[in-house]
Image (cartoon, rainbow, N blue to C red; front, side):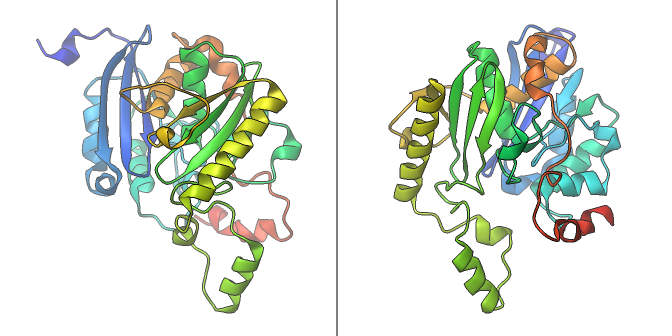
Length: 311
């Protein structure tokens, strides 16, 4: 008898769309890990269907999809070009996240997207001046530590090899966040100086995804991340948890040595909770509304994002 056949009936899956690898996790109805595997991100556009089929071989009852900039619980079979554009915030219809979402899109399975920080209702509206307050996978990491350690109050500093994020969880709810294109990561510069944008514009150089994904200074990045995390921990009288593959670069906070990506397991936990199983008591943490571009107030913003509605 195969390993798959011996597993409990109710299985739940989640996917972490990382910059270097996509991690796929499957847990059972009591929260124990059944399977975990990673595929290099650069391979996903070529092997997305194979990766999805490998996941579906386990016959999971429910799947939390890799959700990029997040949408509150849109079912996989409802995904269309407009939804995928909101999840990726890209006009291009190519790339790892596009390909994996399209692979899930046509599968008749119980699957759904999960929100990013900007859509979480427990985050006060006045704080929503950015789109990137933490992508959906960062929310999944926060959910993991909330559920796995039964923590109600903590500051989560997630250190990816390219992007970083900081989230504040208070009384079991996410109340603030700083995403990877706002604060610097080890590879990404975070928010770009307005004067730099002006000079790029004067030179006729468009700011694109490549512009915001490179050009960081590691030493300065670490200094800023530690400074913001320490300030938030002091303000909310909370401990700092440092997660992610580059967590050893950080000198503060508590760290766990885990053989998996927290966001992948956290996504599977979310799937379990949404479907009424092991982590259902934590699902209020995900109460959300809107979409990634709903909360911006910039002049002319409707025109800026009008292309999404034409898809």
